[in-house]
Image (cartoon, rainbow, N blue to C red; front, top):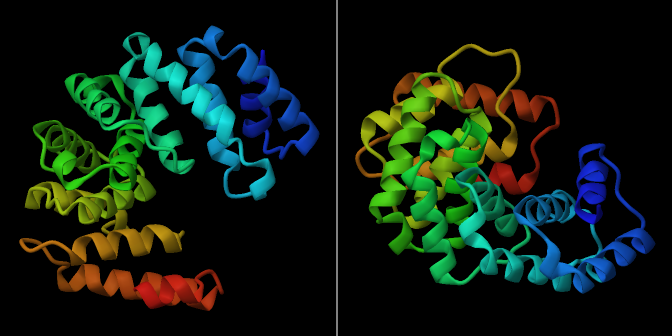
Length: 247
């Protein structure tokens, strides 16, 4: 009931009052051992959706840690999809699990990537860009997920923002995908004519990620598309100084 309430409020776009958050978090701490995998995922996902809007006094650090502890204790019951969502939520909340847990999540997800949709697949790679190390990036499991996301990007089965997040994660971990996979990710973002420009964060993520690669660079057409996209964002007042300077 507690996790479903938070999940529903987050889906509906509500930002609960401090009194409600406090009451739910206090009760969750008491019954944390009763939380099953879906309960933990829903609770952490809701807090992750709100993390940018909560004042420091409302940051759910104790309950997030309690949910993480329960996840570690019951992790064998988690599906690959739930583990992907768990990794994204923990990355958003800046609450990385122990190294052994990160390795377990990566191994389990990579063993059955077909169990993930495009969003979950790109989310788990982005999460490892946030919480992982170059050791994780150099693993065969990370490489397997990169090949899968490249294949799906070529089939149009991942979003532009997700594809950009993967390129950023690779740059963050010092990993360079296969040129074919990189091309498919970049083409997913820029190749087709679209009425809506790439958002500022995705634009920066993709350009910065590619700038770290040695075997791949944008061709003339993609560079032109990037500049055009940037000009549209500037004209619309949609890009701030931080993102502009990064580009």
